Length: 292
Image 1: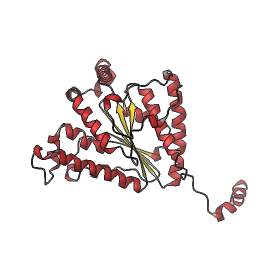
Image 2 (image 1 turned 90 degrees about the vertical axis):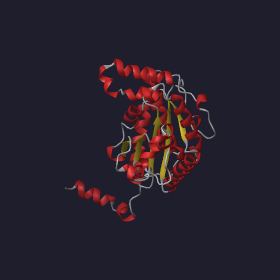
Image 3 (image 1 turned 45 degrees about the vertical axis):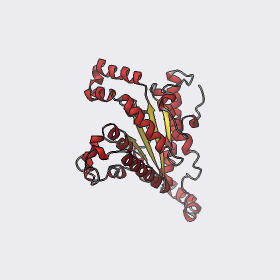
Image 4 (image 1 turned 90 degrees about the horizontal axis):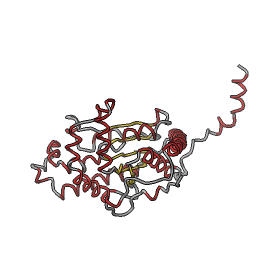
């Protein structure tokens, strides 16, 4: 199996989405790739236990991608060996009436992971510069005092919103959150095949929505918005990673490996030591239990 270099997927300079792969060859079959994932996710689970005991960092995992890019199944497979107390998954849908009464980042603040925990966000705060940019009329639902019409949702508006998002992420990092942002890079042809499978397999029919086809017609516009969003917000403190998503097992292994290899660089993440008094009396406690 080809060795994964996570830096090959980190976005550190301006990109063109057309130049980023949606499929890569790890020179391994499906079984080998899945076995590799099992090994990495067990290591991740142990690392998360240590992080939980350490209690000084939280991890925010952001997953963005077009419909059918495999976000749900990736979450299921990558975090399967985590202790349930250590990971919280949130999927952000259309904002509710209550959420629209607050600023657009409010609902994301509410779901941030506590120290020692992983928060996995399926669709993220970037929906506010992706879907809303493709459909600027949605911004009117936020009832912003300085937005009277769609004409006010202009370049200056988006410049300000990206500044706010970058500041939001910088604030998180400066307060102990490790941020990962994964772009699930799915090709338009692979999406077509996956949508057809949803129609062809009865057990998958429930996943299909006519709205998927409506949004698919806007594919090029979405790609332009993704490209701009990634270029504006891939920072040293919160980088984007391109995850070729046409093959699901490969995508899952890439995400798990990036998480594991990056977190292992945090050499200060260790289980806390016992206080000196307790440590000195361990033999007494052991003796007391043994003699019961």
